[in-house]
Image (cartoon, rainbow, N blue to C red):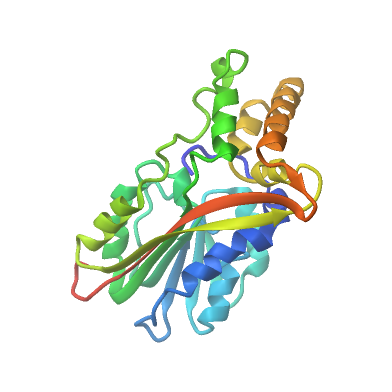
Length: 269
């Protein structure tokens, strides 16, 4: 999130069903919460559509979604209710302002350099028996990103785009998350899942990435529509070759990393 791309909620939500599935899979591994009613924070809530799923799972909870995008928060406001609200926060320096029974983060931490260092403070903000649950893309080596980085680093584009994309180490090895979350004494479960998203329409992989990883490029070239369109066209052609259309749609393999850490008790996890 520190790159602060300009988010387009409508574009992001074009694939809302596919994007929400990992969140529901993450919630399925969250144990019972200690509070009654529970206090929940959604870190990097985006447009709020999956934050609303938290209210379905824990209907008596007080839930706050946090995000640093004014565009996303404006859309999220449509989901607000008596026990569901939204607030501006930057995860690079956010610390829990109160005690939570659940802190959850869905597909946000890849935008936060140094997020591993934030985890101990977030664990400290949990009640005994509380849970930190996170999900991040784990596919920086996939063609989706590798082709974008390669094109951005080519002679035509490197002077303008070399430093705008997320680094390859924006998400870490699963074992590192396990170590950081287990070391303080939490009961921790870490796993990866590769989804085979079957996408429909013309150039659906490009359409997918327009809502996420391509945002920094679109921002960097926003003042030069001709260059923006030239980059997008070249990237589209590379994606067509890497993700060919089939009779049943275009298959986008997408690996995600999950971690659920439950505080065993005491003031420090």
